[in-house]
Image 1 (cartoon, rainbow, N blue to C red):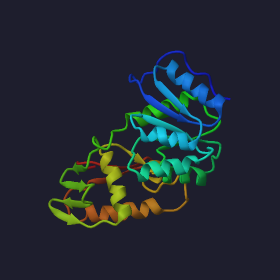
Image 2: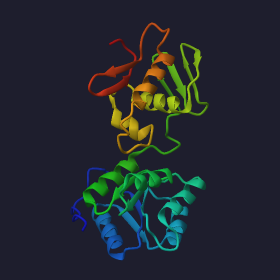
Image 3: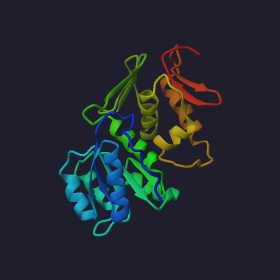
Image 4: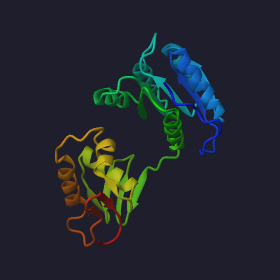
Length: 241
């Protein structure tokens, strides 16, 4: 059963327009009612084809998509939207909660994955977090830390004007570190956001890639930028230890 929704608006401070694509009528009505009680607008589609048609109309802040839907399953719906260029954040709901199930959902284009049964307060917090994410027009395309620069569009990296050649995974790792410059990035964060692992593979894959990346962006330069924070993770910043 779902946790009862609070009877007041949350701290998000913005009215969201949410499309709930869910074939279980009781669940759909619960979500629609609860979202409205929290000051948001919510519409419901009871099958995948109807949900896809409504989603294509645009104007939604978040889509909540059940994975098992009649007429068109949730993952196919999401994949179709992504192929058509839609970037609306998607929260997948599913009773399928194994790691492989979650990975398939995220790789199909979902932005978050919540396993049934769930607490409504958690669902609300997750969709609010998704709605806070910058739109593609607002996303940063260039990062700089000290004399190190990374361009997401051209996939070029340079330090002090000197080009640095990175492998795709190294580029993704550096991009994530630079996006969180000055903050500790844990191993769990790297596994989830760089490798799409929602479990610990019990390998030294992170250590190997950090070592390679450090060798490319710091070796030969007077000041290191990539730092190990013992017992916590890693940090990229402009400054000495």
